[in-house]
Length: 247
Ligand SMILES: CC(C)(COP(=O)(O)OP(=O)(O)OC[C@H]1O[C@@H](n2cnc3c(N)ncnc32)[C@H](O)[C@@H]1OP(=O)(O)O)[C@@H](O)C(=O)NCCC(=O)NCCS
Image 1 (cartoon, rainbow, N blue to C red):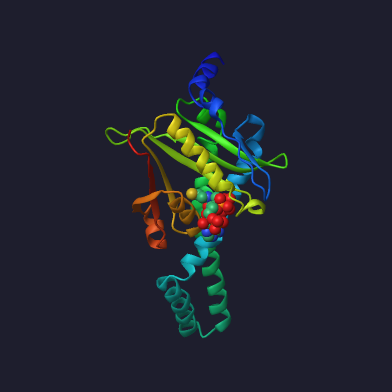
Image 2: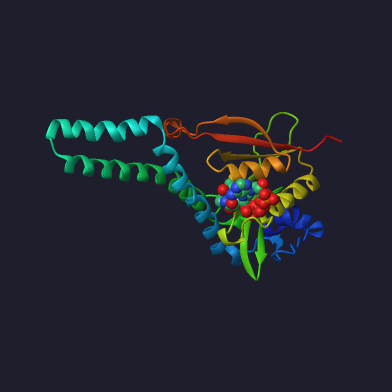
């Protein structure tokens, strides 16, 4: 307990005096530090935000030339071999089902992994960690947005980097500038804490997120496939960086 409090003093709470409250004339909201009582809502927002990628992944995979070839070729082979169109239709149905399961699996695994690691105890992972923090956007007494930042363990020589995680806004509160306000809060925190850069990874599946970061000054520094699955699915992750001008 004592250790936790101490660590907390040097991370988020030490930054609290300059904590920024932002209001929007469209739908009033404010950004505040995460509290333990937010856990369930934060987990829900994060899970729903990630699950939104499942249909996008499915559609993306469906339109790949190799998938279309498979969806045409396999039933055709079935008709030629069995002479049954019904079997061919059943075959297409099962292929689509398999594709949907494949699209779902990696996102479910990612959510599962986060819920067992940094999101299991957000206070411990973010608020009690030196140079880290987690914020929520609150509107009408409800948590409607989240974002976190953790220091990068092995940054390049001469750099002090903060990694941005779990930016998510409830679907009912989008396009009101809440994500932008959350990212601005991370930028302010990082500047105050003496970070040289903010880094993050995101997927090309959601151009909206990439537009958001680009409009705020983040620049693309690289891209990669997370695994063979993502390579086959043609979905890459991009690395973005926001550099503070050196003094
Ligand atoms: C991406 C996300 C966080 C944006 O939240 P938001 O509160 O709606 O974003 P903002 O209102 O602050 O949008 C700021 C800018 O981002 C861009 N943007 C946001 N959503 C967009 C969309 N769906 N399509 C195109 N551009 C979009 C726009 O440029 C927007 O400015 P504008 O509204 O003046 O045109 C939200 O859609 C979300 O939670 N998605 C699911 C989880 C996710 O993808 N998180 C990002 C992980 S890296």
